[in-house]
Length: 236
Image (tube, rainbow, N blue to C red; front, side, top):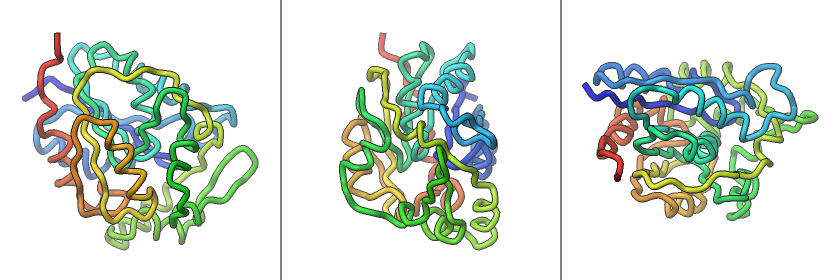
C-alpha cells in the first residue's frame, strides 16, 4: 500500500461529507485519505473568512510524515492552489471541475473570465455577507446526474458560504509537482470553457462524463483519475 495520503477538499457550500462515496472507493483500494470542513462554509462562519483561512486548514492537516496529494473540487481547487506552496511533502494536485486562479486572482474574478451564467448562478441567493443556495435550483445545478435520494440528501447538507472567500485573491506561487485537471463534461455549475481554461494551467487533463458532482455520480471513475499516474516521486 502506498504511504501517500489523499487530502480531499470540498467546494463552496459543502463539507467533508461531499467525499463520502469517494472515500469508500479509496478505502477499498487501500489508499490513505482524509477530509476536512473548510471554515468558509462552516455553520456560523465569521463573515471575514477568506481563501487564506481555508488554505491554512489544509496546510495544517497536511503535516504528515509521508507524501500527500491534494484533491480540490470546484472552489476547493482555489484552496489547494493557495495551500500548495506551503506543503513541503506535496506529491501532486488533482483539480475536479475546479477553479485554479493565478497569483492575485480571486475565484470570483476567475469565474468572470467567461461571462456566461450557469444554473448555479441562478441558484445563488445573497444574504448579507453570505451566499446561500436555493435547494431546488441547487439540485438541478449540482446533482442532476445523481440518484434522487443522493441528490436530496446532499442538498440537505449544503451550508452558506462567505462572500469574502470568493473575493479574496490567491497569494501563493505555483509549485513544481504533477497536476491533473478533471473536466466534467455535463457540468451545469462551472462553464466548460472556464474548466478548459483552468485545465491549461495543469500538467495533465482528463474528462469525465458527469455533472458537477462526480463524487456522487461517478465515484469509481473519479477515484481512478485521482490515483492514476500521480504516485510518482517528487523531482529532486
